[in-house]
Length: 245
Length: 55
Image (cartoon, rainbow over all chains, first blue to last red; front, side, top):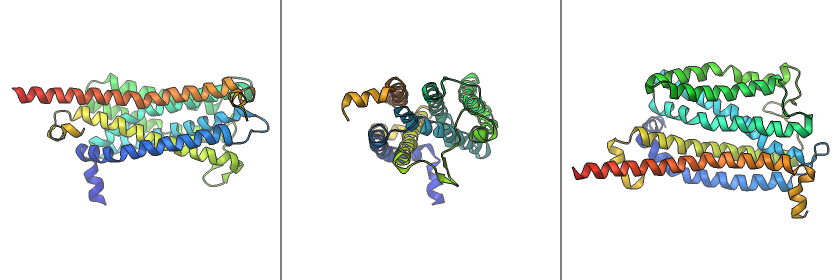
């Protein structure tokens, strides 16, 4: 097992292995989205207060969850890179940033669109919304820092440190709805307390959230493989396998 | 349920479809851009290899 993991940290083996699982990840993502979208837009019953506007939840909540999850993956890979100087973890951290930024942006925008009919306003400067906006700035700052420093190795180090410092924002986002008074509702679903949603509305959310996870894995692998190709373009293994890239 | 009823989303069509549409467009871009980038990279790599073989 350890041997397999260690082998995977080399660009060559990671590229070959990820090439094998990528089509499967893509297919699973596609099927999950097909099922999840049909379930959340057609089958799931209407909400008795919010009517059909509540269906935004099936995009908004998975996107918001992913905005946090991707950040943790990015900061963890950055930390692994700082500690063990592994090339692969640096490439993974770098590839996470734009994906996480898109999820965060979507969580914010779908939240605003949902807020207008539900709260009567697009935006309030409360703890949940503001801390999620700060998360977007962290992603953007991370990417800006990377491109601002010319030397790749120092850029990677600086960006990893920024990502690790920014982790303090993650629990703030998560607990903001309990710590401060806010328009945003508190969690309906919790790891420890289970779900307070009706199963007919809860299960499509589970499918959509799983679809988002597989989508992230697929897109992250695509980006990571491109980075590997770019950085190793003069390596021998690439020349040998030129036909099957 | 008819198709027009479905598209109307109980009067919330604008809110629901803007959310889903925007998400679809952005998430599709995150798939298409790396695909194009990969094509570019592979083309560049093949070019350098062919140039290397000639000299």
